[in-house]
Length: 152
Image (cartoon, rainbow, N blue to C red; front, side, top):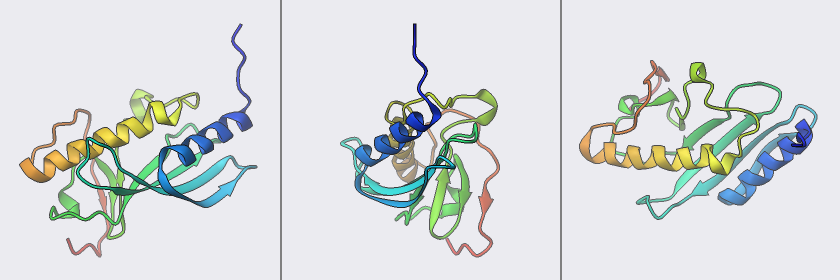
């Protein structure tokens, strides 16, 4: 018989998963009652050419996927031309890791076994895009919400 974790235990498991996955982690906000947190940290991997600043926003009371942002992205590619993102502005891009209609995310998912690996994969595809101007990742590319003040 499989014992189901309580929502609060799931929340703390995801919270601790974030703290252990990223380097230089800082807690931006945490609300245990609402089962929400925002964490920022740096991500480097042997498959990546540089270190990235990442923000994770999670809410355990919704069925939505966590939001993953790349902060202060240093690139020669105009931000408005980066594919496979949900939103872009001068400070961050919200990367697209799942297509909501496909229900690729479930609350039971362990972040380090899904979202964090998908984030590294997205960054590999991004670095290839910087070189080739071709997006090698699969999936559906949605219309991007762009900041009207974007200068890139």
